[in-house]
Image (cartoon, rainbow, N blue to C red; front, side):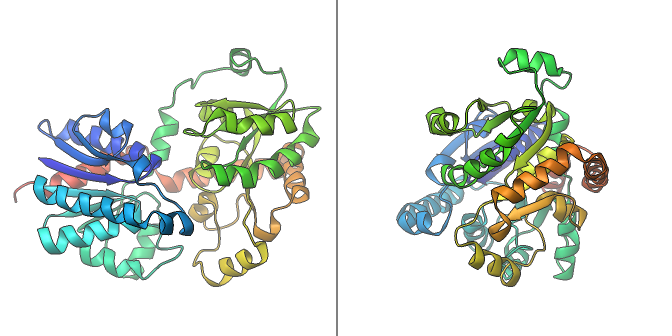
Amino acid sequence: MKYYLVAGEASGDLHASNLMQSLKELDKDADFRFLGGDLMQSKGGMLVKHYREMAYMGILPVVLHARTILRNLELCKRDIATYQPDVVILVDYPGFNLKVAKYVKTRLHIPVNYYISPKVWAWKEYRVKSLKKYVDEMLCILPFEVDFFKKHRYKVHYVGNPTVDAVMHRDYQRESFDAFVNAHHLENKPIIALLAGSRKQEIANNLPAMLEAAKGFAEGYQIVVAGAPGIDPEFYKEFERLFPPVKVLFNRTYRILAQSDAALVTSGTATLETALLNVPQVVCYRMSMPKLSSWGFQHILHTPFISLVNLICGREVVKELFAKKFTVDHIRTELTQLLHVQGYRQNMLDNYKEMLQKLGDPGASDRAAGIIYRQLQPD
């Protein structure tokens, strides 16, 4: 079978590469062509365009690079038409991928599968109409999405969450605290982990306040920042200078979390990873124009929470400090609770167990691959 995949950012590259591996195990003759990244390329097939040339986030970057985005879109359409795959698999990245889905379904009449649903439950709910029209199989990774789409009379598949797989199969699972601190020349003190985002602007917005809040605990704890992949280490030097003796480690996020007593985390998949590694956390996210952002959250977004932990559990499990609530004092107060109030800390850890039950067993990529492969078989 011929498979065409489109992933427009680093997380999509990871999840798509795992899906490709699972498809190869089912289909020995699998042939891949894709827009994606290095991880997908490592599975074989032809890389048409790297996501580094596609990943524009935010209103201004999208406007400034509108011509490039349109060229990439036309390239993708032409390439799919020439390749004539048996199925097109779209991975998240909705602004781009929904346009691809419409073209493939209406012009080429090729089956379209979507792995990792766009977050239409949070905003742009009108996109559900396009999904129903142009996507044959929707493969979701968040359990509450099934009920959301059911409300719109759209049957979808919940395949499990690939982050569960990533955490369950991580390296260094048996690493001791002593081995970790010795390997990275750290102090023999408990660790507070800081995960401040994956993009420069996000890190610049969040990390200074997180460091300011955490430094009040420096006598009894050490602060370790998980450096974001793809960010030049030099970018973090100024933070290390302003907040000594903070330590920044790269490509060690799971190892850092596994040895930490608590974590300050921006929203996104990092909140889920932190919970799966059983680390008490506070979600910190600075927004420009905090009063306006708070109004927008209440009146525009269709979700009560910003963290995946709370969204999956359907209630507040971890404290979310964003917009008007994002202050050094609020972060410091919550961190005190996590580190020193045993009942508060244990309640959060107990709720993590419920979250894991809702997510289900590992095997998301295998289940997704099974659905895709079976639909291509003759009746």
